[in-house]
Length: 311
Image 1 (cartoon, rainbow, N blue to C red):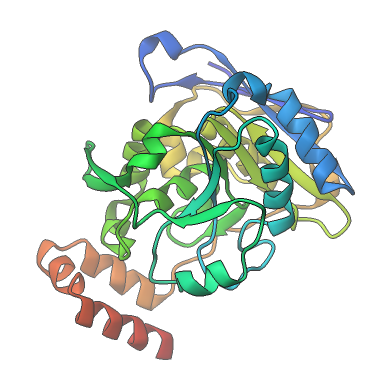
Image 2: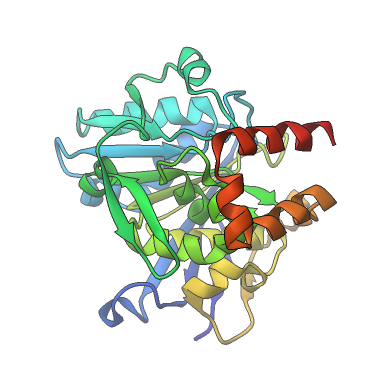
């Protein structure tokens, strides 16, 4: 199966998916790219292109999942607040049951995140809502019941990452795990991501690449999260199949071919950051059952975090 990308205001990605039932295979998944100087205009256009109203019905529950890996909001690191405001405004005209949700994590103080957050709908801590236990191939996860009951709009940021190579749509679903200490999954992160995408496939995916170019507001969108990440890798100048979790979730036999206009004028030639020695040691320790349990103890874990910061 050949994967082809045609860039000219939008582009299309074709590949054979293997993370749903066979009846879903061999279908064309569309990924749209919009670039202009107007973020809201881009958002409205790509939502229209993916026929979002056919996905979200009147008064249907909608959970918007941004990327807030820290309580320090910064474009290019966390999801653009203006983008979220526009998204809430658009979707709220379709349904009043819209919330933005994020879970606890060691890297952020949730109360500070809430203090600086006002986008026109409720912002909830998904670690504190009702949960259910999902057992996948690679682990067991506590996930918010709200995610299974809602249409999910996944709004990640286009970034590279020392642990996963890239962090886009698929990696953003990792943030639905309710545990505050998510590092216990790091030693098998790619396989965990496969489990999560199978358990909670997002309905709409909007990739915030608004900070990738100083003169252009750039967004990508797709109904399919794997297609989105493949497109994001192409935008960054990276081979999608070099990213293990993307390779595990797709079945692409031929070389990627880009047809039409390219991304060359954006000059996005990303390099995946190499883990430092401390990170490598942490990964090694997490890979051992005994040391993983020890690191899972609250006092030990926070002490290790402090030592890492000093190093």
